[in-house]
Image (cartoon, rainbow, N blue to C red):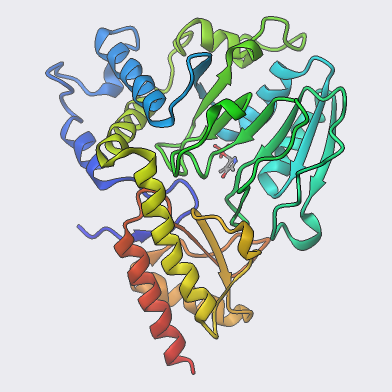
Length: 360
Ligand SMILES: *Cc1c(COP(=O)(O)O)cnc(C)c1O
């Protein structure tokens, strides 16, 4: 068996310890004689799994008691619709457009009411985060929406926008559990789990209780109401049980490693190794403004398309896979999530140096 260094943006690398544990429990979970995927979601064993997962997540993120944690199917994209459907009262949402994912959320909100593009960094292919300290927030806005870490472009909000009292809604898909976050500054946080947490298809929503209401947009289906999940402990229907089980294992794993302070330290160190090299290289360069750099997704280019392609192929042959950048940026992107070992980044940088020297 050979494991590669997988720099995919998502679905992405998982902690090996978690995969091993899951494989050991595949045929017989906890003496039940069955796999978790064969188990009733109404069983005590599964109730323990989901309860422990929530408890560990609350502890890791220090989630205040007046916030609910919901496990929702449909991944990140379904939240683009659920947010306006559940949060629209005046039917106005203010969106800060910092990349494709924010743009998609913005387009989806337009299906249900008025969505304003409050600010945008489209003018420079989303290579920066706009100044959000004094934006013309709509008086009627039900919320201000951001994508906290921009997976495709490799930018992150180091400072949260001034929402002028409106609830802040954030997509944290690609920075979920990468560092501590002050949940109390948000009305709603959500993430598709397949970037930094678990298997695709599941989203975790962390929502302030007062935003969970019955009087959602008329016609909102039962399964698209936060209240349905909140009232039933995310067990109204059969939830994606196996995904929740794996996420729970990842939460426990992160706790054992020392929690989010420790992850932040590790992630910053890993990112620094790569950024330091990019800043010193004559062949490779990072594509975003230094002040807005993400520690999770690192896009870079050589400014020569053929050379980019040659690098990606050569890297793949050496076991560094999924380094091709998004088509709107070109070049390369290394996603260095929690589960990417430091050694993977060090070896990638050593290979980049070698490649650069060979092409001088
Ligand atoms: C990947 C991603 C999504 C989309 O998630 P799906 O689960 O594929 O719908 C949304 N937002 C961000 C920031 C992402 O990185």
